Length: 364
Ligand code: NAD
Image (cartoon, rainbow, N blue to C red):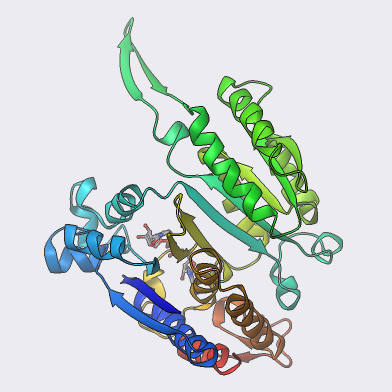
């Protein structure tokens, strides 16, 4: 198969971690006889330095022409970087928002997996962590409170602010379909999270999700209120397979889930549109504090590349080979600094970003 992938190295540790993901993809292509064409584009601070804007039209075109986009991360230290003295629409993050909009990426997928080998990094009590968990949070990304009408007015001498949480049924339906499709390839379970005891938008959400469920008889559906879900994530995370939720609830719950998974350096993500196209990136930022020092953990980006093989190319066997190689490297005791523990130091070997990428590639 020919894989046409546009790459965004970005800023900070972005170029280092992306280059390890490319290394692993090239090894996968060699083993499974695929052809990969990588095209790099600039985004974020790197694009501001070169072109004065965080994303050029030419870069958008190149992203649109690809089968998928794989990204490192963008942005600098907001306190010291000159990029943050620019007006908001010219700052690094504006490039990513523009790209998401241009590509109509409405479904954000964030897995939170507790690896057996990293259980000591989980902040939950041992009897909870020992059960492990493997969940996928599917968050609606282009609607809801973050995109509704907002304003601040003065009424009777008082400042008053409004934000509007709006969804139409088509927006709910298309993300629900994604969630059921994906759940049917996992453990056949969707928990839809809302606040239907209070919000009209949640009551619409719940009724549309119930309608979509009728087309997926093998997938079980239950509804959970968002406050309860926040508690259940720390009380019994093993109960979750696919969590489906709207934009703001998903923003908060996916960060909570990433905390309980231990290290931010291990968490991939995907943002999809209605076709097989997707943007794949680690859940963490550009870590300017460790950029260029060969200290970054490339595994979240490597696992994002594995998600890309699953969701954009339907290469499930190849994706599984990458995930297996990551687990094997962890089982053999190799750790980058962020997941290295002195407490369990016996048998662990601390490695840098490049070495970690090499170890994973060698095991495919
Ligand atoms: P961050 O995720 O970059 O870093 C938080 C902490 O985690 C730092 O101590 C960092 O060293 C560590 N860390 C992060 N990724 C790591 C990895 N792979 N290996 C080892 N350690 C890792 O968050 P931040 O410091 O709040 O943000 C830095 C910049 O990243 C900001 O400009 C922010 O806007 C940007 N950002 C970009 C994205 C994105 O590109 N999608 C997402 C979040 C933040």
